[in-house]
Image (cartoon, rainbow, N blue to C red):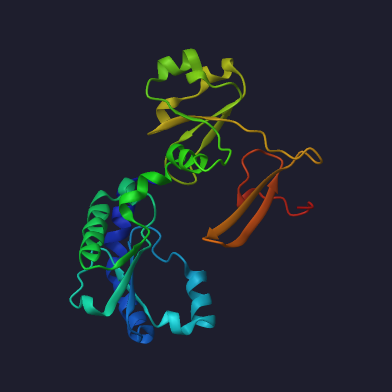
Length: 251
């Protein structure tokens, strides 16, 4: 994750033009009632869900007319026109913008006080950590890898927190962070644990295909009983990322 200072500078530089852009967008499209209050932060994920919005405007214009966009911090003068608040600030805002997190929480508390529904509850951001997320998914019976916090690096190097090798070392929260595969105990000494802010050790589950040895990443979005496949990508390496996908294999 980039430094919080960089996001703060981006917020200072882009907040005014992005707020003006939102105001123009609201004047063009926000005609319906009651409206959906959508909040974003100018420092990160500033134009998140652009493809989603393009689809909404093309295929569900009646819903698009209900969207009203604001940048944090925002002050709502007329609450009567809103029935729902959706936060698009992202699941790590408390890490890169503590002040933005506090403002988002203040706004959310006000929405709840006024009886507005809230989607993407800011108070539940800790659920997006890898360890707690795996635990929550494990509760209904889904097989997830074991996660152990590395609170004492010296102790972990001795007993590996009871995990077998190979294992992964990675950040507990955040996206696009480095993950290190440690295949043998003697390789652990070479891992610089100080490069992680909140390191965890993770059980490595080999999911490579027996037929071709490839690792596949499948992303599926579910909402209630409705599910939509997003992508299926493959790679020879265990860490399957879009920028390194194979394009000439049978998926």
